[in-house]
Image (cartoon, rainbow, N blue to C red; front, side, top):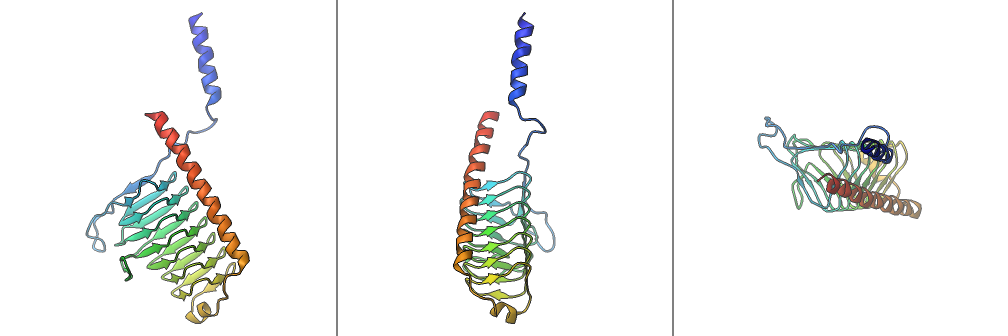
Length: 225
């Protein structure tokens, strides 16, 4: 009789559990290896309020500040010198890659990649090499930025390629555009109100995800103790 009761309880427990593999919330946060380009080993500096999503990796000379949201499969690499600096309230969507190289840019703080406050990088965006992304910038999905400076408030649509240029603040980069000369960068039009409103929606959406995921995994962590 006791066995039957126990078996019934186990069945109820199984029904409550999700079907399929359990998300183990795996992630890699590690120091960089010693190389000629990066002879010093650095461990990432990550604020406690940041959320590092499942299967994401943060390596080497990287600083992640308050309330940053990394979704699944984000890769931030500071193992070629760095540092890579992700400022407060930034959101990096699924599959974003930040790959810093050894050359540092001058500024209030040295960096090889800097992502400014309240910027949103959509899924699959890649920032490669020494680059500066200002505050409140949208980098669209599958966009690639090489060795460039992007001013505050720019809106970069999906699938763009930006290489070796400086883009003034509040400029709009169309879907699929290639901006690879300074003349092309200087000819860009200003962001319209439509895209200012889109930024606000995107920023608000990712802030909701940040709060939701942070709360969900905090509960999982407590339940596993």
